[in-house]
Length: 355
Image (cartoon, rainbow, N blue to C red; front, side, top):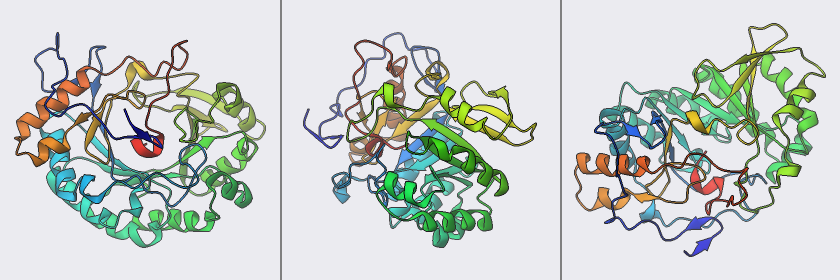
């Protein structure tokens, strides 16, 4: 396999159907470990307006040729198939940074028309959201998850390699004004350089009607600098937050929800921690993913990808595409295996997969 900064240039032959031996007769996206996928993540671009050290290389990822990206109509068709034929209940658009794509409002509008009853969310760094929040809401976007790791401007610039914190805060204000805060979730990747900023970020979120969720850093950075012994764990985060707040464990209402919750100072507000490494939730994972190039990726850490773009462009029926998608999900691996002696990082980095 030829690789350039995490983007493989060869995938599963579109004519090769994944092995489905033992798969039960069901329309749902089931796998061999008894899980069913209901949550669809769609990356729509590899481009980003930031260069976060835990995700992107400083020079960015190589550009995907325009004719290799899914078009808005193709994305909408896949959303329709997922909702109608595969049991998907929620769709989230990711990147890279989805707001860098010029036709992002069209993508949301067509997806909403294809599956009008399905909530549409977006994960974004909020740069550009000040002008796009209202058009996205009008197109059918339900809510946004905003990535914000620190409120310290110097730390933000160091971590993202860009001095754009004010633009992010403007975007958050616009999301509130547009009604995309239902609830507004802030995602913060826990990094050694910003762990001491965590209590201030939580205090700010409580004051600004935002639900904060910290995320343990995973080995998905394009620079391959991740080391387990250097990462900030959930336990360390809790200790940092407890220097300022009283935290009471709540757990998870939904076993497939990635975040464990803690009530803050007696509630009702909570803070979440997505402990993907130290307290992983792989056994209850309910996600299916599409890359910006139209391949099904059943797991963040599984490099096997099934090409649906080829099927879309070669005249395949919706039923045929749904069947191939089901087959791809049947082969989903048990988990990321970070603790295993033979663990291997995925070829794609997070920026090339989609969050």
